[in-house]
Every structure is written in C-alpha cells, then in structure tokens.
Length: 101
Image (cartoon, rainbow, N blue to C red):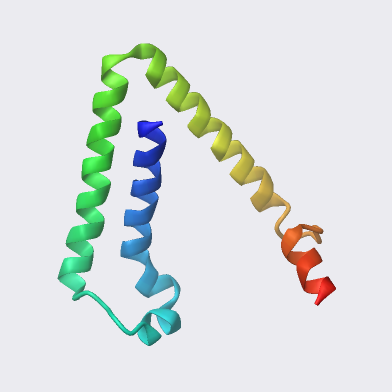
C-alpha cells in the first residue's frame, strides 16, 4: 500500500509542476499561489522522495517489486483502453448525470 501511495504522491507532484501550463485560467484565478521557485522545489522534491521510497521498497523484496509492477502495468492498460474510447460516445456516470439535470 505504501508503494501505491508513493505513486499517488508522484502524480500530485506532477500536477504541482504542470498545473500552470495545463490550466492557466484556473491557476490565475486561484486566491493563493506559491512563488514559482517554491512550487517547483515542492513538486520535484515530492517526486524524488517518493521515487526513492519506491526504489527502497522494491529493492527489499522481489515479490513486492513484481506485484508493484503488475499493478502499475494493469493501471497503464486500463488508462490506455479508456483513452482509446475517449473519442467515442460512452455513457458513463458523467454523461448520465448531465442528462438527468
């Protein structure tokens, strides 16, 4: 479970770094913004520390490493499949909730 938390933290660090470029309007409207150097330092440090914990955790146990890689691979496959269906009309929860209102 710790390895999964580390992946979540890596993704959060990536969001910290990429948010101003991906959603500039929303970032500009935010009432509180860290200075750019602090934002970059926080994002990079979270990614590096989390990656370090992943390396340590997988280094100690081959079984943990294989399980971690299998779960990450499965998540990647699910992401790729969902992304391939993104252009098609899919009646998901979001679509159904919009149709109800």
